[in-house]
Picture 1: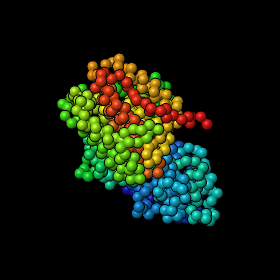
Picture 2: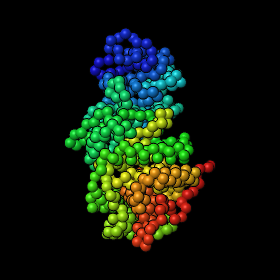
Picture 3: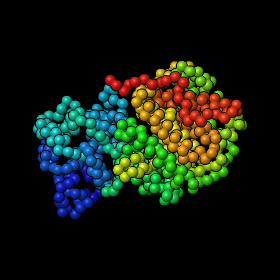
Picture 4: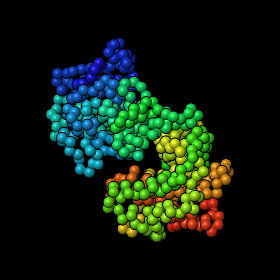
Length: 552
């Protein structure tokens, strides 16, 4: 077991110790063979699959794998293939894979020198001869497939019996893939699951090198380097009282051109996931939202009071909208007219474009004074519902992916919550929206009235709590500040959701919703000159944009 592993090895996860010193860190080595003939190997593999208990790790590699990598891969719990996208490995087979959401699935194995089946959306990966087999049903299926092919000719695709058996298993059930690759520092890594990442960072569940605990790895180069460095510094500087609300840093590494951070892995659902799966009702969702906001105000904000620069609104909100609009126009030149238009039709209503409104607000001294906070604090920066892990069993939550703002208005955080409950960003991001765009406008409609109403109830409950607890601290314009933050978030999130799928549903829906918010905020900023504005807490579309797709 020292050094590297190659050829054929069959390992089991829950059988007795063998007593062999080299395998002392393993629960047991079932089989280690280097058979002279391929047919003998296949019979031995089939026998090992029938004889084994628990998880079995089968290695049949044309390349070397470090022991630590094998140990990490063997720690998985479900039948999984080990693949790699790295070129240059002497691999004997190509894997047909498909990415669905956060997961990479094996669809079969090929002898086609990297050519993928028609219609497959995933670039070819290489199957490197490692398969963790979990459960008696999968073991029996593979053993039967091997024995049925032993002694016969290779199939028409040129697959060996073992590869053909894996191909058959992949076509019988969805087999996830762990990816053997390298991190930003050039070190070998086994990636169990890709996670959603924003701000130009790559995020994934990383298996440990050898025995240990999984971590959530965030790494960045280039455009995302500065933000990740700020996040590492911000989390490292939290006092224990604030730090208990966040996933802890296990390790971090900052170099001139790249950085990485490993966070403690928690197998917990997000608040958004619990809502969209129907596992909690609106009352419980609102309770979690209130607890999150209360913890931020009590434990996170007090440590970072700062003076407010005179250009705070321009720098934090208005310039960000302009910058992200420009980035989106460059990335999606075919839709450039939408981002640059002075006005657009949104759900049949003529609205002014974001660029024109931003320029007007930036020149309005009275509006800027109303929107400028009295002081700045240390904020999370991105506490939307997908950045909160919920531990219902222990009645606690953990915040993840902080922006790491050293001095922002708490309204910035509340605007992130509001873009979940009021702008319905969760539904847009989760695919519960339909969009049609033309040269002069965007039409969008949410496809689940039930979920729309759910979020409305959460919003109303949270607003009632904010008012009752004096969140605004006697600031008559506190909700204007929240609405500015919400509108800026929706009008500037587009570059992080570009799909390049010709539809760009999320990008277009976010911008359309952001335009509605920005136009209505501008309307109320003008109205305040005529007298106190009403304490409106949201601004819905002027025409109902909900279509029922929840049945059928």
